[in-house]
Image 1: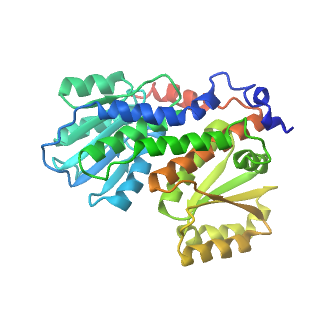
Image 2: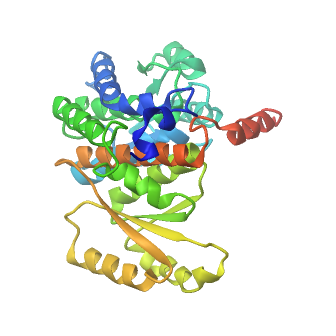
Amino acid sequence: MHSLDDASYVLRLDPKDMYGLTCAFPEQCARAQAIAAAVSLPTGGTKPSLVILTGLGGSAAGGDFTKALFDAESTVPFLVNRDYHLPAYVGKDTLVFATSYSGNTEETLSAYADAKKAGAQIICVTSGGKLAEMARADGYPVIQIPGGQPPRTALGFMLVPVIVACGQLGLIPEQDWDKVVAFLKGCVSLWSVDAPSDTNLTKQLALSLQGKLSVIYGAGGWQAIVANRWKGQINENSKNMTFANAFPELNHNEILGWVRAHEQGVEHWVAIVLEDGTESAKIKKRIEVTENLIKDVAETFHVLAPGSTLLEKMLGLALYGDYVSLYLAALNGVDPENIDGINILKAELSQVS
């Protein structure tokens, strides 16, 4: 039996139960959908000509996934803002989702003030804090989700309410949440610690990443979004450096970075390609040629998104990466929840007026 098949080994350095929070992702999505559906939204106003989600870190990740749905299914543009301020073109015809898991993210509070000043339509998604307090005082809808867990484990709470709200407002088609949740439960059964290493692809990939520097390549737009999610999870949970990029853009620059990669002091490189399974012939050829060009420097692994709908594929592939990051954390002997570096930075920033 491999060590990753021993729950006590996987959980030995996980006092905050990051693994349990990951396994509960399907239930989190179901709960988030119920919470969002119960909130009354203003549906009689002017349909927005632009939707912007403003947030940082895990609170903004849901915006990236929602943008992919808008790109595929909506006639209204959707943007994600990760800054203290909103663009100057935000106005009365803009719907702004202000998202902060804690409700106290300083950049999001600043952007909320910009949205209010611009007269934008505003919906807040948060567990409470100053954002909820200000929004309620100003009369804006608040979708309040449960707090108390690391934001990177709260993707369902931060993403699902935005999708539900946009569906209710007629901006994107409404999703079949019962089907989505059932699909995610199936993924958990495939990738949990109880699924043995010889059939558990997430454990196998974690083992292949141990002690190596990885690059994660998305085979297109939404796959690139998930690649960035993988990057963040491996950075935070596994305490490993990794990089993310996407086809076809990487073929116009990064492909040449591999020419001298063997001289950069890295003993082992690994490339991971996240795929949909329906990539065009051009993208397939780009992947094939790239893999061949780097074969002497990096071993390449292909990960195919599970699921049938775009939302299922995005969430399933993201959950796959979550499990990989947790198994890699166990192999690395690190606490996946610990974020001392981020906490030091926040403490220093609090001294800056």
